[in-house]
Image 1 (cartoon, rainbow, N blue to C red):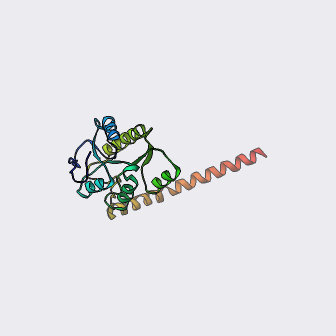
Image 2: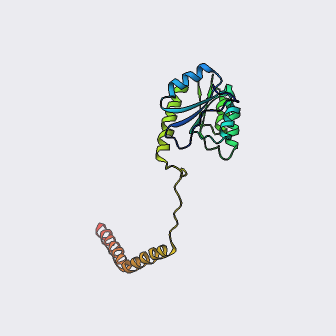
Image 3: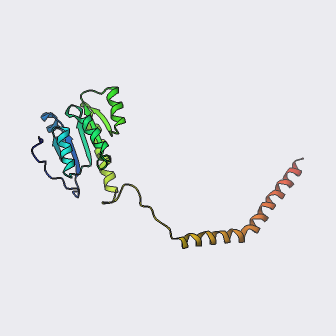
Length: 193
């Protein structure tokens, strides 16, 4: 388990492995998590919220944070969401038992989800799969949203003028079609009387 004084193994932002920061104070739970997710992801364990914040402060990048509420996971959630650079990192909280106040607090704090220990691995696996697929579709070095494309004024003016000209030229034909439809409706109404 990583403590506050030991540096964590480097997790470069360019690695293709999905990067998970595990904040867990129980060695047994940490080993269980590493067995479940260590093969498909790069997992960096720390034992407290302060250790996690030190890693973020050193510039380490993570795709997901899984934090135990007993290892100050709520404090970590608050600090990450309050920091401009770190607030986009998804956080999943785990707890011995779920309660309505914990759920409300987590949702207010913009946690991705909250799981009890009994269901944590199933739910986290679903979230990791989704986030890994989302990351694969997002081009590296680009934000999650599309870039704004500016259209040159000349092209915009050409589009408006050409469309307006075509509509103006075919408007007599459209008018004749409208009159023909009205005439057919009148004939149909007279025939029904």
